[in-house]
Length: 159
Figure 1 (tube, rainbow, N blue to C red):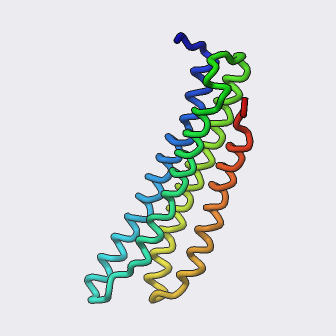
Figure 2 (tube, rainbow, N blue to C red):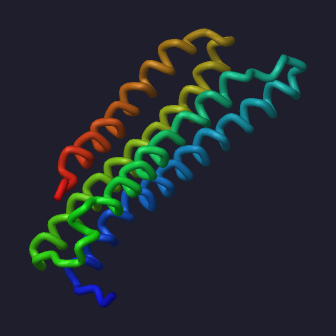
Figure 3 (cartoon, rainbow, N blue to C red):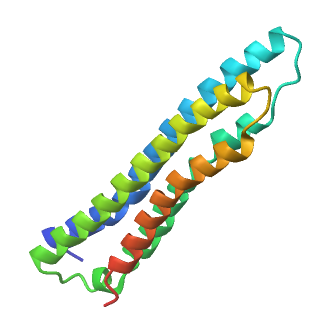
């Protein structure tokens, strides 16, 4: 089956949330993981018990990749893409939707990782205090990623 440019652009656009969500999640996990390892090193040298809470912070940016994965699965299975006939404007519109959602996931996950890194330092310096506040702050930026997913889902063509 030969595809036209509009279908290729639409499929590429539907793949962007997964790609960009994975990139953002990786950057976020890297930022938090690096901070966590620094704090574990400091705690280990001082003979303190290593805090498990840092792992929670490091894992939180992973959800944006999951949002991107679900969006990509739904987008590539959209009935409008299975027919193979799209106007060029439709293909570029779908590309734009995918790019928008992907960038939202990337920035949300990366930002969440930066907050998680700061949270590691806060938890360490505060002698374990503030965990709930850090999770709430990270949850707020998580909401941005969730809204990006919902926006993309609502914009997906159904036929």
